[in-house]
Structure formats: structure tokens, C-alpha cells
Length: 138
Image 1: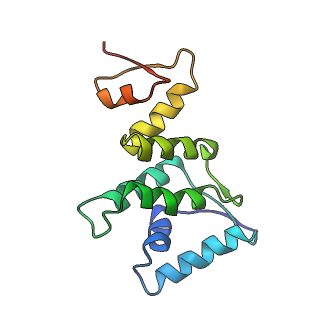
Image 2: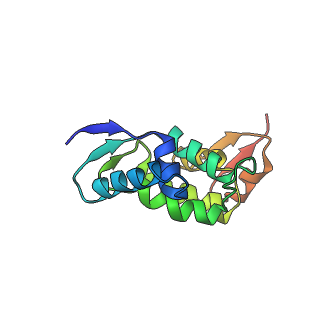
Image 3: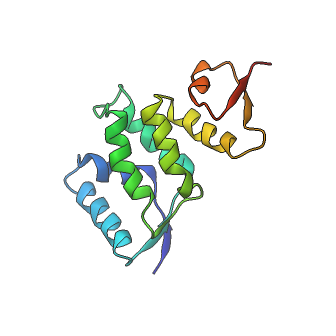
């Protein structure tokens, strides 16, 4: 088994099924990872890029937060896919969908929650939706 990097476009092709050649190949790769025939790795930044591309109103995708979560989260949680913040993704997507916080801010909120004290400097009021955090303006 080879441990190779998976770029954002592979996730996008799999999720959107918008390319007659690349989409089936991407699906086959994730199926091989799911079945334990292949191991791979990616980064938290790839996850953010996928969310950005799929949610962008500038693309034909313009997917809802729920649709993005439902399509991307199971891929990120595949046992054969190594991702640095894998255990945080369910909570990140909870905030992204449930609190309507930007994905990157949801990611940061989950990281801040794990700190003592769970406080951050920000002018972004949407952090106030995360009741486990304390937002402070400098």
C-alpha cells in the first residue's frame, strides 16, 4: 500500500460527479481507501479548499452547508485517510451547519475550545454563537 496525498480536486470530482473520466476515477480511489486497499493522506487546508469551492456562488456548485457536510465528512473520516484534525471535523461541521459560521471560523472555534481558557480576540460577532468560547475585542 502506498500512502499518497489526496488533493482537493479529487474530493470535488468525487462529490460533484461532474467529469465523465475524473469523477469515476475519484470515486474508485475513495472506494479503495474505504475498503482498505489504499491508504492516503490530506490536510486540513484541503478540507477548507473543498468547502470553499463547493459553497462558492461563483461556481456552478453553490452547494448548501448541509450537502457539503453530508458529502465531505464521511470521506474525511475514512479510516484509511490520514488527516491531522480528523477527530475535530464532526464538531467543525456541526458549527458550520448548525451555527452558520464560516468554515474557517468554525475550524478555529473548535481549536480555541480545546484551549484553557477558551478565549479569542476577534471582532467577528458570529463567534458569540459558540457558547463555549469567550470572544474578546482588543
